[in-house]
Image (cartoon, rainbow, N blue to C red; front, side, top):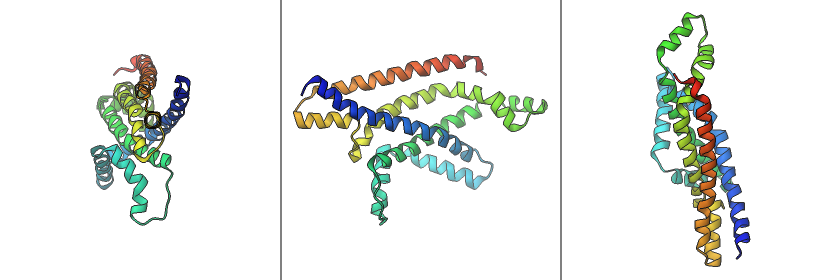
Length: 215
């Protein structure tokens, strides 16, 4: 199997990896914010429901969650056939939304209360204070931890292979088993390094652009 053939097959797997990564971010970022508002709710039953949910998701392996989403409905008797890639994406979105929610919460709670009080004195509404005064300071503070989670997400996409989704690593494993080649497994590392490197550059650029909003 030639280098170009291996590259072509790995590229197909990498497209699935990118799909998992992109859809997870698109779903988890807004969902995480909703979970944050739930966990910071002044209504105690709602607050504790969200907190317990986040605790369960963060305290159990993502691999287990993928397996549960894919096989769970059938095991409890539901006559539902879930697409493998869809099951992976659902599990990833829920998992990362919970991690993002804790980062959001930490960022929001790090803003001094004096800034909220100053906004109220100036006659601003709560929403105006949040969007005009607080939001960009929060974004600035959460970019580094969010960046770490996003880079972790790149590598976690390899867990999709647990239910035989053909992403980058699974593509390499198939080549190894079929062609008895070992070097494609190392070649996979180049894909991850390049992608992670590009994301790191973008995140560093975003962090520098937000330096103006330091609290």
